[in-house]
Length: 136
Image 1: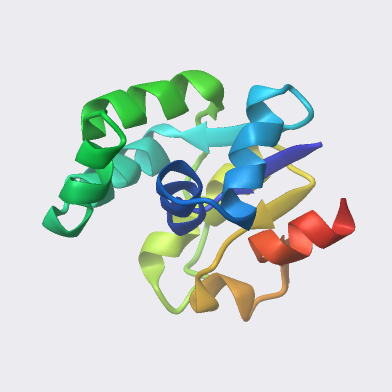
Image 2: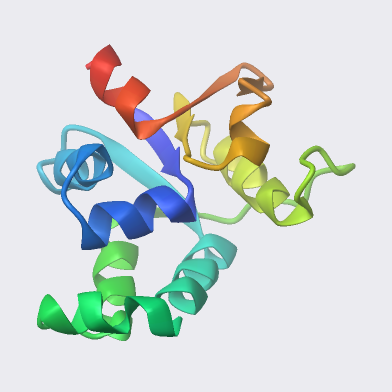
């Protein structure tokens, strides 16, 4: 199975236990492939650099840069073309959709309501991490 994990899902999976972590673990165990792009990795770096995550990252004995490098190495990188026209209420989320298309993924996993309200994009289901775990 090939998936795109939105940045909010990745941050949760890297820093906390729970269903998003199961996605990261499934990829580490090579049960699935996580597809990402330069823009999604850059967004992850920007989010993990936020002050609100400093303590959690430090408690894990890592740096934000190490987390980003580790995650990046875990993923398959694609180079998506921009979408022809805006799709999401939040234009930044169009990069996630473009990555899903370029990566020919089976599912897009997100906790972002702007993406989840779409339910699917060009045949790619958009679901939560909990839904992904239930689908097994």
